[in-house]
Image 1 (cartoon, helix red, strand yellow):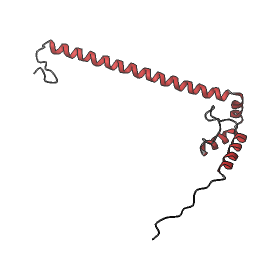
Image 2 (cartoon, helix red, strand yellow):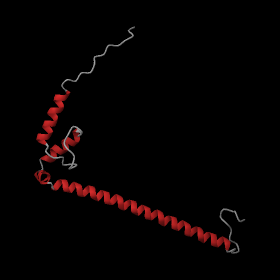
Image 3 (cartoon, rainbow, N blue to C red):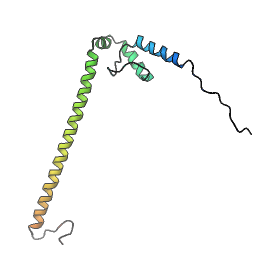
Image 4 (cartoon, rainbow, N blue to C red):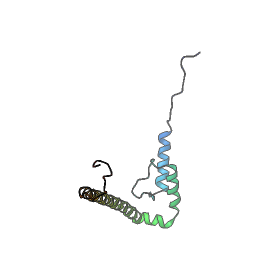
Length: 130
């Protein structure tokens, strides 16, 4: 039984050439990233993203918006709106937390008042006073 295995080392001498050709194709065929607006077209794209951007290139209106910078400003507005919504969401959650805390404190005060008022027939829920 052999104790060692001979394997061929991975050799990709053509890899740089292929990447160069892909980047050249992308820069010639897809001048703008229609999906993100600010990202450069590079090999970080997935095949699906490249396909969607290449397909969107055929839409003349999107290409015009990208060339004039209008598409990038639209993307920036979307990013700004997302940030504003997230900030608003955090503010609303903080306010809800404060309100819930105030309600809990008010309930505790009412409960303590009732217990200390010694109303006949009233017993503590936690049986501490019984």
